[in-house]
Image 1: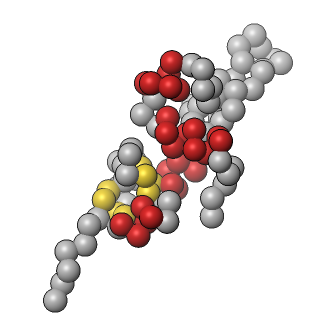
Image 2 (image 1 turned 60 degrees about the vertical axis):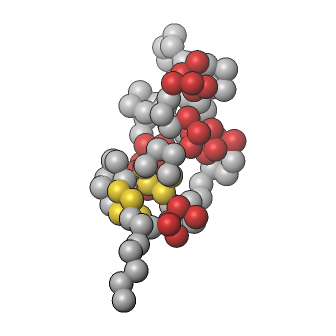
Length: 96
Ligand SMILES: [Zn+2]
């Protein structure tokens, strides 16, 4: 008796996730991306991905390193990862 299990694919890495993963916070149903991919994005330098990072003043150049900013239009309306990003910035830094 095989019960049909709901499996969702991560848009970035293609790994499959079940409902249990969503409940446990290992997969984000809003964006269809897994937490592992988000963790990798968060570890990338600011220039490659602003995801999950605060904005830092950059003392070596004139431009600050842009991260999450609740006041910016991108972070409020446009970024596809905004809910997850805000959750990471405002919540715990790392989830295990
Ligand atoms: Zn993934």
